[in-house]
Length: 503
Ligand code: BES
Ligand code: ZN
Ligand code: ZN
Image (tube, rainbow, N blue to C red; front, side, top):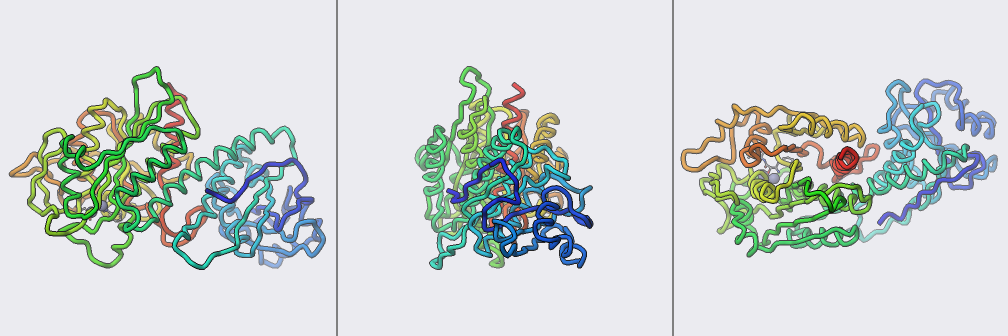
């Protein structure tokens, strides 16, 4: 998938043969140390001179390229800003790597050598830094160019991490290996979410899930409409009713602990396009709703990573997939649907469709005895309003699970924030004619949406990740490339790796 090859080699960075060498610099440092100092000397003080002149500040996002003009085997040195040393983190390593490599790609560099950013003056664990660099490189260089006739020949093909200490190589290589898999998983999620809805229909999404499952050695079952009907999933069918595209339900299984009956359930919202249905959305920005299957995409991508990494844990993914469209056969406000568990739902707004399809998935997951359940969904605009684009909200009815999610998010660098479950808001979901209605009060909309899901979850340990704020970004920044983010794929993988270790 990625043409980029990442190698780890022992040696002296000043002697690296590449189109460019990358070194880092903290903000406010006047006299660079370590590898940056060695390169500075080799270039007769060019770096320190630029710092002195104020051209290199070491700020985050800053990349300064200096031509070596024959003074070094490499053609260029790129000094990448690491920001303030006291605010340094692995996320800064990911972002700096991504920013530097995108910059060098624009310059046409095909081969890049770098020190392990963060492992020197940064004081971070070298293996984790190597992992972060691999994540930054693979995610930062991601592009979705499938539909562009004009090819871009410029591509970074080789990144070599050059390390002085021979005894570190093995750990660095392990870090790089894990980083590549995590980042490739995130990029798989991005590929799915960036794909337009005329191509990525529910049928096509199921086909791609099967391809990824096969690549990673997972079981994958796809239910067609008839089976979904037989299984009494009236909520999923209701959402799909307005579309010419039939729905699918995807079940993926990873068994890393065959002796154990315990199986985690991952659920993902797979709305391949959310027009709002009869409760039609405004035209402005509606194209972004091709990404309304990002929750399912992240779950599929996480399953792929599990298949590649093979931790000792069992995980089953259940992905309801449908297109939400208005038409003569569409679901209407006032309609009453019957979910898999027999409970009836009065549809107040057909644009609150994610919770409908998830209701059926939750019922089925509970029947299978999956626990805990973790659902991932671009569920509410309210969550996006609450958090803005820099954080993903989640809910949990289990404090230990919430804590593990926070830890996993910390590891991935995907910022997450826990929201409260407020039982009182269940009242706003009371229907006069059915067991529940699909929309509550406008205020606290993300919380009443969670409350709707909890109606079906009951007492099962559960977390609900509302990624509506973060499924998409509007510009390139660090590891984020304009378009789908692939959030929270890496957080899910870390969570399950951690849970596998705990058993
Ligand atoms: N897919 C949307 C939520 C969404 C909004 C995701 C913005 C990403 C960005 C969801 O199906 C929806 O439309 N929710 C409604 C619910 C409302 C009708 C209760 C919303 O949030 O407005
Ligand atoms: Zn909607
Ligand atoms: Zn939606």
